[in-house]
Image (cartoon, rainbow, N blue to C red; front, side, top):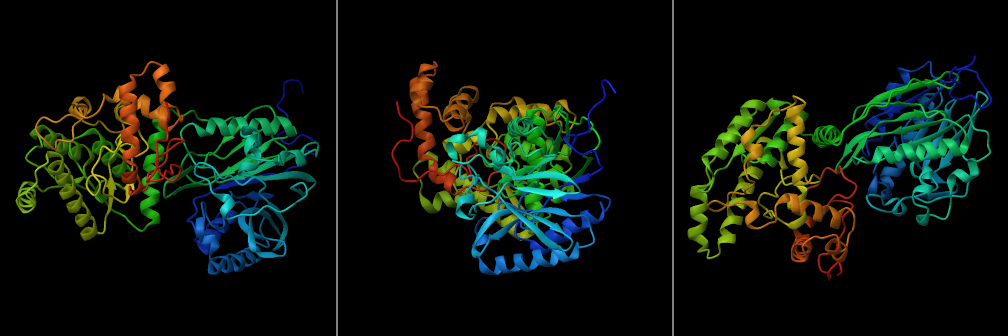
Length: 553
């Protein structure tokens, strides 16, 4: 019929095939419960003809050095065999898991198993092992020689790739092999890509571009399955999708478990939400905070509330992640804390409906001063921060709560924080958010009627309040000047020369570079940072502590 939408898998066969993509949240290393989670969802979709999990679903991702322990691999082997038997009478499954190479029990590949009739019918391995940015797969996995990774099911030819395998054209200089070459001219009905693809706020657009290129190249639809998880620093947003040969996209939930079902014989419906940067930030930070605490056995959190915008944003995040009853804020004023900051902190706590406790630190500070006979004003400033850090850590330990740290990315980049002071904490909520982005996100929360952070917190000049009338601009350029330079140096790997050629003040740029480099020892000891940008100052930022200048004129 003219103008009708072709079936998604119309290459050669039009018989019904119902496929379900399981976008689930796995706990790394939690093998048997992960299998139970998968099985529970399979049982909910017994009418499916094929069920597909994400990359390394059996173990969670990133697995890191757990795979190097014999006890873990033995448990995995037993678990896989038992799982295959348990789902014998259920729909066939494509399962992501580590799996030994043939005749090489000590060497594992990043694999996708085709489980059918109670056994492992086929093992397909990942070809491209990323070893850049947050990835370190070459440390753990090996790549065997294999034929074209195709399974045949009910007359359908399904190509199987694992995450990076469709990214060859994105960065061909890294690899010597193009995995899609083996699938070209194979008359596929569907290309599957199982993934554990870490989030950053610009990443999904690039994913879709790569999926589109693979679909056009192989002339078939693509089913992409991603995990959803907050695994320490790395966040996984899900957003699994089906992409047909006409460019129609049906997308699963963002930062939530989901099951995306489709039929190869029927057209898919368009569903592709558009998220703003601030909306993605908010979803990522709330979900990442919630998942980190849950997976580490915490139900409560504590933070220091100063009356500043950073701690205000962190309080909003953790409250939405855990609920107001599970959040405690400590106000720790010194002689230099303004009454307006104390009032602002209490006003915010009232809006969020979180508990507060006020503990003045003047007496403790005076005791330290007299004991140490300090001469330097900076030492006294840092001491106030360290007293606060000690009280916060002690309160967290006493109440079995997790302390979150509230420093932003601008401060972490230049070391504008006190080691063992305001840097104390088990998780950095906004350590990948520039200060200017903090202001933007807070305004977005107000515009979207999510949280109305008091106007005075948003408009007053940023200050650590560690000496009389202190302002951040006493030590730093305005954040509107500082952040673009930091972004260029850290996220774009710009040189000093290029920035000066663009018109930035040479002395300011050189001083910022100096601050970045001398603060490396602080970042080395910082809390894990929830990653929301391509280049975070955490796992993917690995600089030597003793080194010469990294940037050059």
